[in-house]
Image (cartoon, rainbow, N blue to C red; front, side, top):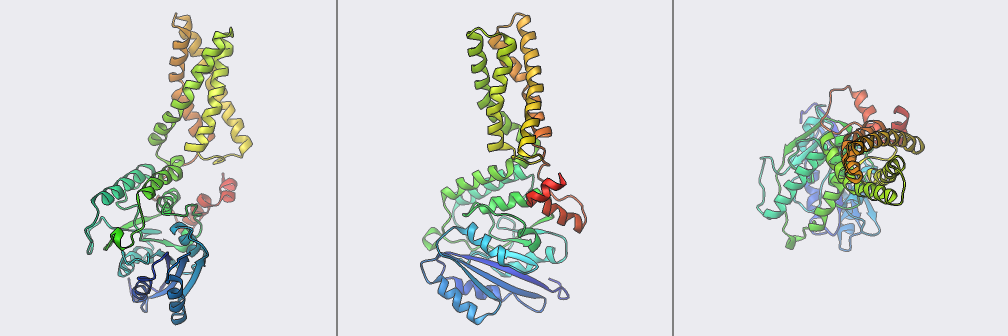
Length: 394
């Protein structure tokens, strides 16, 4: 980091039963401070039942730059990080695990793009060549690669290590992100929300001394499944268009059978095509709306709830008329009604998606940073994280 630049780095250390390594970890973090880098260390004890909290308090007495916070019960790493982020005051914020898997000396290199105003977020990558890497679990490694690949598909980023424990942010960025995940799911959640902001993201290689499970490593298979859920939950509504279409096809595969069932039932009970087709379409559309909001698109992304439903109803009505016309035309050409209805449903699939994506649930896709001024980036952060600001500017 250039000697003429002075910055304050706030290091959040989430801690759960790390009494054996916490002191050494903090000592290593303290060593990176110099004339150009001031430190603020926020230790968040997440309901530890070992000596972690007492060790943290002892360190706080000796070092005025240390602040100790505590959760009365264990809430998870995401909750501890969230508490830490709310209490930092530095220019740049980093997360440092207390288990010594990451080397604080790497933080000095990761700071450079931020201090030079080249980046808004910097991620450390265990998979880019730099420093020593302990050789451990093959399948754990492959799991990380898969999760990163899946995350990249949804965010349209080209990261190499989404689950990295080293993530550095400008304070104004991270304090405007509402972290919802309490556990390890906050990693894909933060990556998703940063991607939505279209900020300048950099990635740099770091060293990594991973722990074996016998040494206290906590992350497991269930955390991997949670990460998949979080990638889907926090990204689907801003995923690239092609990926949203694939997800919508899955939703439609659930709603379409209902459409056909209602249509067949009404026709069997004597109703005309003019009544059966639109009724079935509207019934399926109601289910489709619920699934779209729950799985794919974000509720009230562009409109108020009432206006959203009104516009959705308008789109459904327009496509229902199209569906009816196609069904009637195919039937007039001698095609069986059920088959005609099924073919019509296929024909309106893309208009259905387009209507929902571009009229009802309008949101820009995620992706890399786009050139903009500092004031414009600050406005973008606010609009992407503040529902009130988003509604006003929309």
